[in-house]
Amino acid sequence: MIHDHISNALNYAFRNLLLKKGLNFLGSTEAASMAVGRIDLEGDRLFVMMQEYPTRPEKECFWEAHRKYVDIQYIVAGVEDIGYAPLAGLEIVEPYDAARDFVKLAGHGSVLRIPAGMFAVFFPQDAHRPCMAPNGLVAPVRKIVVKAAVDFLGNDARGAAHRR
Image 1: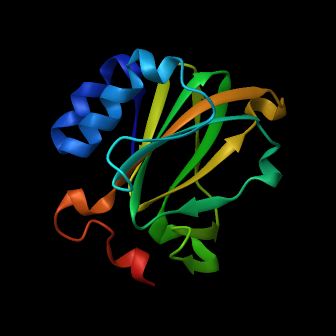
Image 2 (image 1 turned 90 degrees about the vertical axis):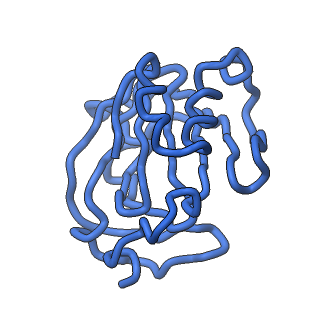
C-alpha cells in the first residue's frame, strides 16, 4: 500500500510502466476534466474510472480486495476515509468473483484520511474499505480509480493469503 500526495506520485513510477502511466494520467489536464465514466488507457490492462458519490457511514462500507488489478484511488474533490488492512488478517465473507475481480471481506484495520490531492495504491495483498464518511459526516466526493493489471508485477504478487 502506498499513500501520498499527487505531487509525489512519480516517486513510485519506478515500479513498472503501467503504474507510471496511471500516475501520470492523474496529473494530466484530461484527468482534471474527466466526465464520470471509464477511459481505457491500455484496454483492460490499464483504465481509469471517474466516480462521484456521497461518502457513507462506516457501518455501510465493506472490505474488499482484488486479484487481477492494482487500485490507485485518487480524490479529486472532497475527502474520504479508506480503510486499509493486510489481506491475510481478514476473513472472506463472499467468495472471490473472477468476473468482477472482487472478494468481500470482514475484519479490522486502520483508516487513512484521503483529502483532495491525495492518492492511495492498493496491491492484491492489500484489502481496502473505500467510501467512508470522515467523522461520520456524509459529503460528496469526486474520485478517480485507476485499475492496472497485476500481471505487470512479474512473479506472483498476489501472495499466499489471496489463494485461501
